Amino acid sequence: MTVISLQLRESARQDTWRLLGAAPDDSERVERLGTDLDQFMDELSRVSMAWHDRDTDILRNSARCVAEKASALGLNRIARVARTVVMLGRTEDKAALGANVARLLRLGQGFFEEVWELQDRPG
Image (cartoon, rainbow, N blue to C red; front, side, top):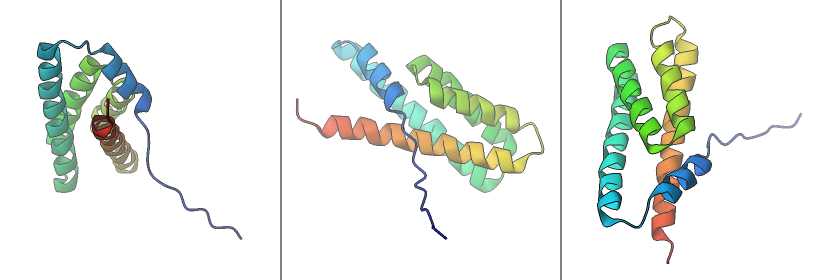
């Protein structure tokens, strides 16, 4: 029997490049983008806290905010998963909800890791 170790990491690289490619070299736009990303990160944190606190109402509201902010930023995959979390938050399917919350948080973490990695590159 062969045991395969799965790494739970999803890439949002396509969304990351779309976001960064859409950002002109305008300093005002870059500053606004920084603020938008901070708010996006805060909402993802709220999703995580709500999930751990088992507060479905806050989870749905925070996931809805994540979906809106992700859509506005062009982060389509993250927005789609966040909308799924909102929808599943109205059901009794806790397994599906948990799987999608985990996926949303992985995508968010992957996105920010890629942004930080790009920031650290020279040029």
